[in-house]
Amino acid sequence: MDAINFTILIIGALFVVSIIATLVSARIGAPFLLVFLIIGMLAGEQGILGISFDNPQVAFLIGSIALVIILFDGGMRTHPERFRVALAPAAMLATLGVVITCTITGLAAAWILGIHWLQGLLLGAILSSTDAAAVFSIFQSRGVRIKDRVASTLEIESGSNDPMAVMLTVTLVGVLAEYTALDWSVLIVFLKQAIIGGAVGYGAGRLFVFLCRKLPLSFAFFPLMAVACCIFVYAITTQFEGSGFLAVYLMGYLVGNARLPQVLYILRVHDGLAWLSQIIMFLMLGMLVVPSQLLEHLLPALAIAAVLIFIARPIAVVLSLIPFRFPAKDQLFISWVGLRGAVPIILALFPWLAGVPDEHLYFNVAFVIVIVSLVLQGWSITSVSRWLKLEVPKESGPDQTMPLDAISSNDVIEVVSFELKPDSPMLDMQWAELTVPPSAEFLGVIRQGEWIMTRENPTFRLKDSVLILCKMNDVQAISTVLASTAKVGGLTQSDFFGDFVLNAQITLDELDSFYTIALPEHDSHITLADYITDRFHRRVVVGDQVSLDRLVLTVRQINDNGDIKLVGIKPKES
Image 1 (cartoon, rainbow, N blue to C red):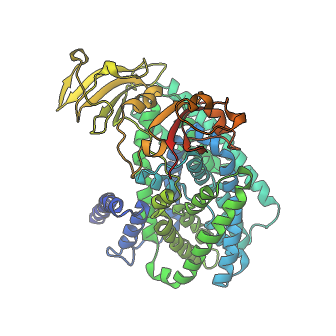
Image 2: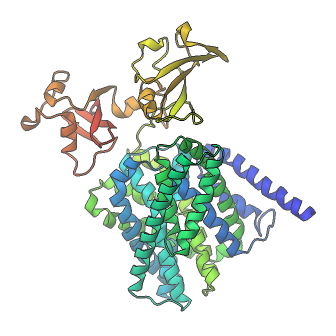
Image 3: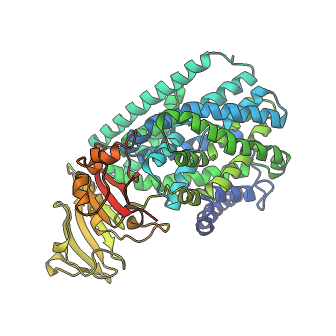
């Protein structure tokens, strides 16, 4: 009994230390996942606590479940417009890009380590996928928002390239363990995984949405049902030799974008579960490694990391994105954010579980490269995005959102709260003076803890919390009018878009009446939307910019059909 209590004590202490350590991590700019790995190593066999953990089966089980929860959460937070603007390039990176990365890295690893080329390719396969957990967590924790097309490509790629990496790893492990032949059947296996994973994920997502609408469960049970269903879907898909990770990601996407009052509740709970899963996974993987064994492969692993980061990934990105006309700076950023996280370490357990010779080699090399990736790439993601001028202002939004999920309604209804800051556009105004959607109802103000009701017609003051009842679909429009424009990461809406916003349907001639500009003769009668669209050979996204004489036009808002709605105007920098 004492041993059990002591184990519980250690586990609880590790969780508390990991959570508190995120404050230090945020202050120094270190990726959270790196901190969790280091704490796990300090608790491990050669660390301060000396916990001996050498069970790859348990590690693989826990890691797989954690990844399922992380991918489901990532899928729920992927919006439809992300697929519209980036599905094709992300799919190329998730398939062709993985193969190219595997080949270049694998052949380099075979030469550096002096091993057989098949062993090198296995190591390349283990390292070939970008990690959704690393990408999602760093973007969220840093509050980084970059251009939609680049962000969408990275998120969809990192959430969908695991099946290819898993397939390559399993195939090469089978070849080295001498129970699989290396022939054209590999392609059939991949297609089977993709088709079964996509079909099961789509069916499971639709079924879950149907059950949410029909089952009279308490709202507290829906997040639990979501966890149970995503784990079950992963297991049943894998049982039928499909890609369980792809199925879970697609299911999460369908659930997250369904018009369900339960979705907000599920998202809130799953945000905590996703972080818990990452803490568990990285603590466990940190305890699994033996630091002294890392030193044996340190220099070769650093050389392979250099090949992966500076040669293999950039070549894979350039070749995969040739058909899609990405600007050079976008390709450079996508190359740099090819983060490696828990997935390569978990894939490195496959040779260990299959009894492939030199099984510790794969695990130790993968572990070193993951640390290098998190330190070098993860630590610099914000500065690189600003250096390449890919950062866009964070979308304005309410400070608090309270969904009225217990009330049956055709529209999701929320109470939102905006706290007034020194730069708030609402200061010294009254509700009647604001231009907001007609569905928004003013509920009053919380001032110094007291509720000032609507009938008192209060004038808004600093630190007031303004309460509004509205439809979920109108929150963004309301936020544009009411939210603070305080700087996030040094960039404001006016810095990026300009101080003036115009309807995209006005013509260049009409624009010329406000600004004296030199207009192209054949373009003088077209709209701002058409002028911008004609200069891109792809779908336009928020943040795209074009020059017009001495002005810079920036796409500020796009409607559901992908048409430009609002354009920001600012003078060109001298």
